[in-house]
Image (cartoon, rainbow, N blue to C red; front, side):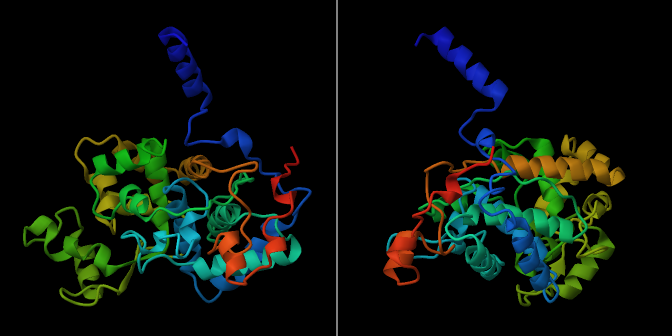
Length: 353
């Protein structure tokens, strides 16, 4: 192929979005219409029951989907435990001692398997759980594209490289999102998931006492808010204490995250960077979302669908795991499933399109 033809082909790929990080055309919200029509209701019921006693879980499940998709795509690799052939992503720096909801995903998988065996992937369960967690917190709902397959590997080193850190600068955040095919609006919208949930003091305590080794607090922290956070996170205290991401409506999915940034009440440095970085193009987006919750919700929905398309496996790629924390070959070896049940059905690959 000559250089002109190659350039033309690449231009078409850009125009139609057929890039390696996206498989949008292969996913469909009605994927399980014939094979597991009640899957969304099953997932919702498990999450609803868990959230009655653990309000944090809704935010944790949204985060779990995010931490899956940013590492070799939305293939449920984050759920895999360490084995003789797999090094778990759960022990990567951004995940260790902070990922929550793994047990809930296993409960969901058990419930789904009892009704629709060998049909629904763990990757799709993560995507559904994120959307349902949003709606259960009074946030936006969207039709989740489905049909993902589960990966056979995990990649801890890639998790360390790809997942944004709480102390990242705006340029670093943009680079991390651009690597996944996500733009600046996607970055600001997805950051809005910090409108609910909690964070350990260890993730932001340096902002309160010794920002950038200056011996002083981060100047972008509201002084009243600074004292509130210091009361929760004393200098030299336990880094496991928890602070609400949103000090106003801690468990509700709303636009207050952006209003908080406007008054220097972003909990993480990476939050506040969106508004306090001089001359940043993110400032106008924060202002827009703070003024118009519907605009935030619409952008969040679009960004979640876009993120959920990153590097997905479809068709006969990967597998439909029987146990979300082990690939089927390992589950069979451990006696968790019989060899005959390891994705022997084609049901999970049949789309109702």
